[in-house]
Image 1 (cartoon, helix red, strand yellow):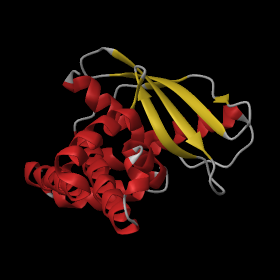
Image 2 (cartoon, rainbow, N blue to C red):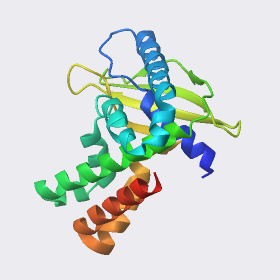
Image 3 (cartoon, helix red, strand yellow):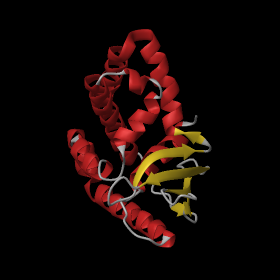
Image 4 (cartoon, rainbow, N blue to C red):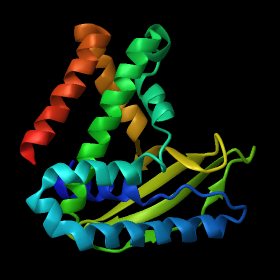
Length: 205
């Protein structure tokens, strides 16, 4: 997958706001409004973040955690291994995986080209428990990437629990990666790999 496409994908994941409204068009509007707020915040602090990259983590964490159901995303990514893991192991994977996503998003934001994001019409599931929001992101290279967000409502707000990039699910993609790591080194091996990737991102910044 091209690097520019990956940047577009990662940055776009930040642009979903927790929403609690009935009308689907309002959901799309709030998603777009959230995108503008995120961009404004990072554009105003970009020089600061480049000079002090260690500050990116807390800023991104404030943006990501309220918008995503990271527990559900991690559970989906682990697949059958989620039920085989102990509560302690699950917690360790959720923490390490969440940290990886947060740090990766921070790097993506600093490299975002600022190209516009277009949103399609939100679609509800038949049981009205899930919503998907299609979008198109223009990467720095000029290529257009189709991204679909999947949201559910475990509480008062709609939260993202999966994202598809040109038909490829984030959860399914990580499920394959996680399975290989678990087969090779067990649950501890997976956590170690995630933590190693986190440290690599810290050094890179």
